[in-house]
Length: 241
Ligand code: ZN
Image (cartoon, rainbow, N blue to C red):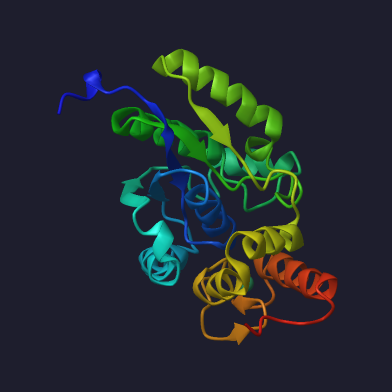
């Protein structure tokens, strides 16, 4: 098919899907709203690349557990990107600006730009990402204003009317667990708890109440505290259904 003849519809979405808690919640969010949902992931040499190995299992599990979503979930796209390595001049300059050491310059801008290029060729209008201001440690490319500006830029540059969705933008990690529960009940919460990966060290040797991880890196601490707060707001009851 000649892609130049494609026209976007309002039914299609492309989800930035890494295999972590946030992006999996976003995938469920998209599957509950759009009739055609595709996923895109990026390999850029990240240390916690283990989450990428969770992607296929998560997609399979979602289809098994939620058969009503099975007709909606389409292709998975995987792209290799070259991003600055840790310790490069760019990263050192960022650290001097008090940005976290986990900040990869321009990462999320590139993710959405590559996603938009893919969505353009797939005739998908809606782009969904798990960026948020609440827990993002101050990443400037996760800010609401940044992504609103990027939406305008992409629409001008690609001559489309994409809509960038960030359903987690104003939610903390506890609220993200609550969103997952509202979308798929305790079954989805447990699927995300046991099958997603967040740990910066790529540690999947120990299953904690909040999921797998080393339990000491910043990503694990954030996930653990969010889970504790989520359980507390539920009255101290973990998933039993
Ligand atoms: Zn960890």
